Length: 119
Image 1: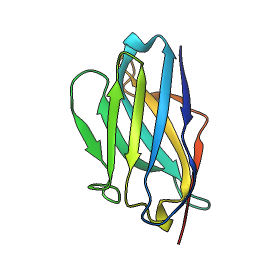
Image 2 (image 1 turned 90 degrees about the vertical axis):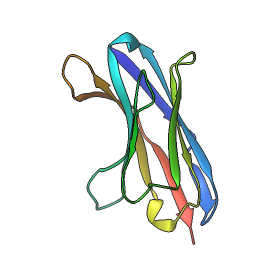
Image 3 (image 1 turned 180 degrees about the vertical axis):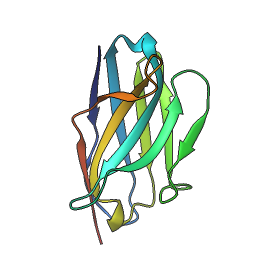
């Protein structure tokens, strides 16, 4: 079992920055990668970014590439999403997720944190 607690959302203006955090606990040694997804009202869930739990491989969704940066602190079992140059279309609930070695699927999810960007 892995528990994920995401935080850091809020209300900001267009062009501002925000950093989200996702703290993992439990059997973190079984985590292969961590990712951020988001879901806006009336829209499907969208992939934002992913990073390997060990190593430096990171990948981004097209809509956030160049503006968002995913990173991790293994000592704290925490993954971050630095979001710069925020746009109103970035407004969504952001979820972190853990991809597990033994399934290759995102088995565990955080509770979500709301990000609202006003124009």
